Length: 578
Image (cartoon, rainbow, N blue to C red; front, side, top):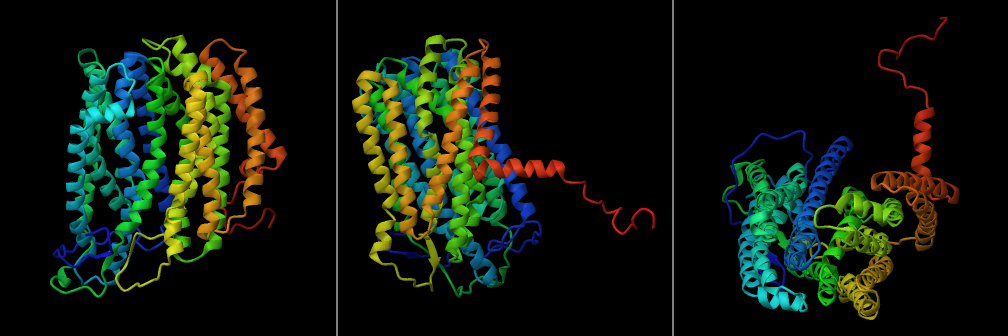
C-alpha cells in the first residue's frame, strides 16, 4: 500500500476451510445482545482493574526498591519509549485504523460468503508491512538512544544508565504494535477477553524480573521487565487471533474474484497518529524541564501521574463501553442519537472523574503515604508527590472529557471504505481531520509556556500546573470542534451540568480535607476523608440538580422501595380469598 492514495486490496489469499458457526457471538454488523455487551463489559472491567492493580503494585515496588533518585529518573526517561508506543500502537492510532478495517472485512465476508476471505486479504496486505516498519523503529530507537536521552532530558545526572535502559525498552515497539493489531482484529470479531488481559500479562512480566533481580541488576531489572512484559502481551493474543482467522469461511470461493473489495485510506491515519504523539508530548515537556530540577523530581511527577490517572480510568471505561453505540449511530447517519449518547457520556465521565478528583485533593498526603512511604521512599517524597497530585488533579476532568470526545470525532472520518463507495470528500472536511491536532498543539503551547514561567519558582508544581492548563485548553477547543464536525452538542446544557458537578466536587473537597486531617494514621485518614467526600458530593450534587448524581441515587432508592416482582411460580395464581 502507499500513503499518497487509497489502496485496494486485491484477492491474494486462498479462502480457509469452513468451520462451525458460533451462535454465541453476534455477527460483525449485528448489534450485540444486551447480555453479550454486559458480559463483555464485565470481563473488560475486571481484567482492566487487575491490570491497573498490578501496575500500581509495580510502581509501589519501584518506589520501595529505588525511591526517587537519579536512578529512577534515568529509568523513567527510558520509560518514555513504551509510554509513547502504547497509546500510538495499542490504544489509539492502531485501534482507530484497524478496528473499522476488520469490521468492514467481516461484513464483506458475510455478504459474499463464496468469495475469497477479505479478512485474510486484509491481514496479508497489512501485517507484513507493519512488522517491517516496527522492526525498523526498534533498530532506530536502539541506535539513537544516546541522542534520544539527550533530547528528552539534557540535564540528567546519569545519562549512561538512561541510554542502557532506553535500548532495552526499545524492544517494546515491535510487540506493542503486534499486540495492538491483533487486539483490534479480536475486538472486531467480538472477542474481548484476550485483549482485555494484555496489561495483566505486561505487568506480570515486569513484576517477575523486578522481584527476582532488583538486587542484582538495579533499575535495569525494571527495563528488562518492560521488554519481557511486552513480549508476553503479544504472545497472549497470537493463539486467539490464529484460531479466529481459521473460522467461518467456505472454500467454495477459492479462485473466484469478490464482487466487492476493501479499500484502505492510509492518509486517514495521519491525523490520528499526529494527535496521539502531540498529546504524549506533554510527557516529553515534563521530562525535559524536570531533568534540570533536583534529582527525584521526574520520579515525583511520575508517581503523582500514576495515582491521578486511577481517578480517570473509571470515566474512560464508560466511554470505552459505549463507543460502539456512538459509532453505530454515526455510521447510520443518526446524529441526534450520537449527540444524546455523547452528551450523556460527557456528564457521566465528568461525575465519576470529579468525584475521584475531590478525593485526591482532599486525601492526597494520606493516599501517597499509604501507598508509597516505605523503604527508600521517605516522608519528603510523600509530601512532594502529594503536592503534585493536588495540582495535577485540576486537569483530570479535561483528560477524561478529551478521551470521551476524541472517539466520536475520529469516527466521523472512516479509514476504510468499500471499493464501490465513491463518496466525495471536500477539502473543508479533510481540514477538520486535523482540528484535534491543532487543538492539542495549542494546548501543548500553553503547557510549555506555563511550565517555563512557573518552574523556576515552583519546581515540579509548575510543571504539573502547565500540564493541567494545557489539557484543559485542548478539551475546551475540542468541545467546540465536535460541533464543527457535525455533532450538534447543546453546549449550554453540557456546560451547565458540568458546572453543577464542579460545585459539588469543590464542596466535597473542602469538607473531605478537613475530616482527613483529623486522623494521623494514613489508612484511617484516607477512609474518613473518602467517605466524607462521597457523601458530600452525593448530597450537593442532588441539591444542585446534577442529573448524573441525582439519577443513580433515585434509581437505587426506587429499587429498594419497589415491591418484589412476582416469580414464575406465582404468575397465574388467583388472589387470596378467591
